[in-house]
Length: 539
Picture 1 (cartoon, rainbow, N blue to C red):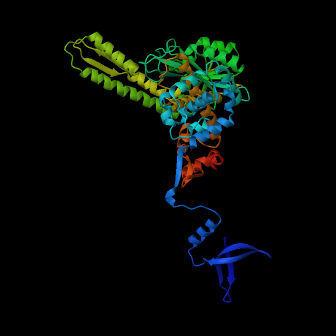
Picture 2 (cartoon, rainbow, N blue to C red; picture 1 turned 135 degrees about the vertical axis):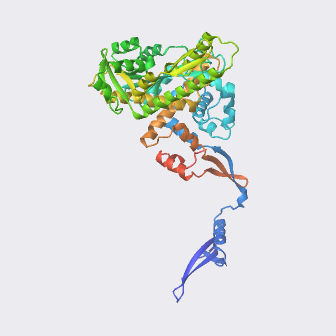
Picture 3 (cartoon, rainbow, N blue to C red; picture 1 turned 45 degrees about the horizontal axis):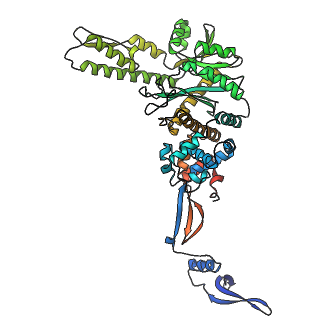
């Protein structure tokens, strides 16, 4: 049976529609049909329901239609699509078993979506599409020991893996390399021969640490990562990096950009001898001595912080650069240090002591000012009566204020190969990458580290590096589409899109995906991800 719609026109010009339930049957003369009933007077929704039922469709009360096994999906879909497009699976073919490779992929994804200790990954993975995205069984336990064993499979494979990542990301030799250091501290003592006390960029000098040396291109895509002892001096890291990049990646001609902590005379001479270019920042003390040697009219030119000034100092090509944003930052930093130092001086002066040890109090004041990085701004003394007195060094403060916003760059590149503007642009690239890496480090939660075995510490950092690599590649693609938001934040927002099974009565009907909110849909369109969310994945 079926519903047939017939149309009739009256003499008055009106058109009437009739809804007839008809039945087909066979006769000797051929197939015929007859009217069973006329349902024209029924409501439209009832007529549609009858028509659909006659076509074989099932209908149930709305409360028996449910979304079954809904999983957080969107962010994982984006990461999994990028993983496939970048062909990362083929880089892991020789590493461990199929399940262990899936667990490694799960750790990498989790660093961007919900970074946590390996012990808690099983909890964070609940209610997400993580197991399916990594080709694992839906009931995967993500047990801590299994994750550790999967990490151990990276031993002996990292050099090959890093080479393949470089070849995949850079079809041509990299000509500009940005080099940066950061530190990561341990909870507890950390592994022997690796965890050391040193200069902490996390401001946790009370914790042993390791140093991470990262080389990237101008887009922030990482080339190489080294894990070094926590007490390694900055100047002693550069030549090892140069050797690795030349031997492992074949980089013979490039310009390296790095901060002042690595610009020792030996390093710079070694780079020049190897035919490599560099751009680095020199210390504030060197800048002050150079400005003092300038003629008065040149010093007056420094008032315009939009101007680049190039000069030669001790046979070195130097560029003095700056900007209003850096001037404001320097001013705020100095004022903050002075305010904190004065508050500390007032506190120390107000402490009631039964017996004052003049030398001990003066030493305490000096250490406090050094800790607050404000020692150069104050003159102080403790009189015989034990009274602490101090005053600001106004000439030094005024001289530093005059130089706010300026920094000194040094390069061995010729003017023909690298103009002053390009020198500044190279160094700004390092600042941008440094800022992006610091943000990403907080997203990845590389720190603090809870592992105790040296190889597991290194492999933990390497997995964070792989997440960083994946994020940087995605970020480079998205910036081409005008997106400025960080990749981890975008994928975490997209993770609110859910995937589930539509259950109609006792039967699973099909896979469905929740509707994309309007604002999020605009971002999906902007990033070119619409096709990814056009239909649910095949199960």
